[in-house]
Image: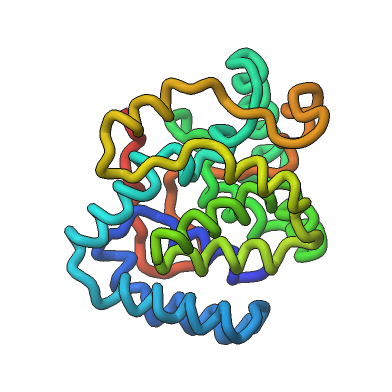
Length: 240
C-alpha cells in the first residue's frame, strides 16, 4: 500500500489541530514512498509547512472558501459530471458498494464521491490498480489544479500530485471543457449562488450515457481521517 495516497487524503481534510500536529508524519511518509516528481514534492512540502505552522482559523477559513463555497473546486467529484439526480444517486450506491466489497465501510452520513475518501480507498488497493482508478477522474483533478493555480493556492500541489500519479494523462479537450464552466470568486456571493443553481455540465463525448459506469470505479470520498496517520484528523461536517 502506498502511504502517499493517505497523505494526499489527509492534506485535503478540513484543517484541525490534529492535522497540524501530524505535519512531520505526513512529510516523512512522502519521503519514504518517493513516488512524486521532485518539483511537486517540494510544493507539497510548502503546503505541509503552511498547515503545520499556520493559524488554525485562517487555515479553516481558506479551506471553506475554496472547497465548500466554490462549486468549481468542489471535492465532491460528482459535482463536476453531468447526470440526472436519479443516476447520481444510483452511482453513489454503486460506489459505496464497491468500497464495501473491498472492505472499506463508510458511515451513513458520508458521501462516496468525496475526494479524500476516494484517496483513502486507493490507498488500500495495489498500486497499479490505484493508478488506473485515479486516471479516470484525472481531467477533473487537472482542471481543479489549474483553477487553484490561478488563485495562487498552495493546494494546487495536491492536485498536480494526483495527476502525476494517475496511470494515464487526462484528455486535454475534457480539461478544457471543464475550464469553460463558471468559476466565480468565493467573495462574489451572487455568482456563487448562480453557479450552484446551474445544471451539471457534460464533459466529453458520451458522458451522459456512461456517467454512472465510468465514475463508479473512479471516485472515493467521505469526510473521515486518512488511515495510517497516527494523529486523529477530525472530519469537517458536511455542508448544509
